[in-house]
Image (cartoon, rainbow, N blue to C red; front, side, top):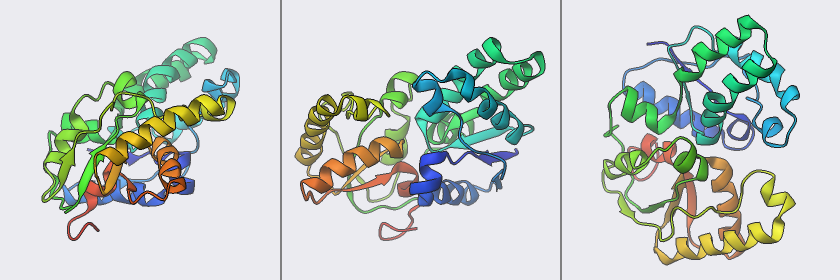
Length: 246
């Protein structure tokens, strides 16, 4: 199987360890992972803010960069959802016939990391060890868009020595929502305060998600309260094998 890593803008610029963790896990499972150098943004920011035509060249570049791969894996539910749900519609609206065909063929092969492990590779125990108390926040795109269900939790429960505790009100949005947090700062802040309070109530050492954008938002709220909870992408937990580190 030819597998490519789609790292995403946020992870590339701010959380590179997450991409490395994805590769670590997949290589541990016996797979080779390519990183197409041509990849850039998938166009999520443009589409979400109404600049749909500006996203077309990015969509076309994405289709070229990942053409020929059996699977494209990304540690971002929001970007995976964008490519699968919005690229085909965008191509139908603005793209020439060849691009429409390319996008339609590629989109179903794009997978968020945890669904790739559980659904495509049929793996839950990836040989990880993380001896810490952890709580999991299901991000809006993972919960309502991709409908990941309990896939992330199943992977976490299979991690040796990990104590997984339920997050109260887990299905509530953290208040990030991309530009929502900028345009509606007070509302976003109130939602974040509720989420931070719920996280602290678990007594967890670590909070994890499958989207670093939301993790960054919640992590900022935790930091401003000098909370003792650290944030980590789920992929980095799965890459860990000893003492909480890879």
